[in-house]
Amino acid sequence: MTQALDGLLDLLDLERIEEDIFRGRSRSAIVPRVFGGQVAAQALIAAGRTVPEGRGAHSLHAYFLRPGDPGAPIVYTVDRIRDGRSFTTRRVVAVQHGQPIFHLSASFQEYEDGLEHQEPMPAAPDPESLPTAAEMLPRHLPAEVAERLVEARAAVDLRYAETPPWGSVGTPREPRSQVWFRTNGKLADDPLLHVCLATYVSDMTLLDSVLLAHGRGGWAVGDVVGASLDHAMWFHRPFRADEWLLYDQESPSASGGRGLGQARIYTRDGQLAISVIQEGVVRVPRAK
Image (cartoon, rainbow, N blue to C red; front, side, top):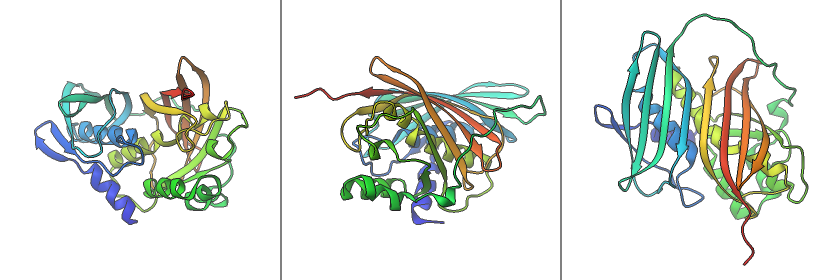
């Protein structure tokens, strides 16, 4: 296990300060706010720790309300909305400095058999044939920015199938993007941990497809100001976050200072594991 992954797992190991109240820390951020994927993953961990044994997360719906302060702890309060015969529902509010910064609703289900079909996995290059982030980022970004981005993502091996948006500024492309990802080290067999790590990674690249459509590079090159607004995930089939997952992303629309991204995440053997939708602020800075 890499030191970076060990640090991320430590962040997800929330401190229980009351029956349904947890406290989490943040890592140093490359922007002056807490990474949204971290807050979502911590909130899902908090919810999952109050769920009856044998029930796994099957969906989450979240809103990012305020920027998180990386220098302050985050308190997660869990409301036990319902414990049914098959489904469990939880609501989580994340608070900093007396104000809510994030809201999550999550549903958990006891496994059962049912009808089966799925959208086929799209074609994609093998992950081993693609450059690592440490190899690719310095080709397209200033050394300082590339170094900070590599460090921030060191817990995850994330590989772009094609040039990312900040590597093709000024050249609009089809609003589609593919990345392979897995954790940089093996994980325990806890299904909740794998779901939370996939949630963490899901916020890293989903709005890239919005930028590609307009030849924009995003915050890394300063031509777009962005932030996550809301995020939804559906977990369809079992998967491991320490094995390769294909994140196939596209953007059907951008308007009103917002961009929409939607995606499917597949296991390497072609199983559709997760569906994701996210809307975010995508603003072009005004000329001074």
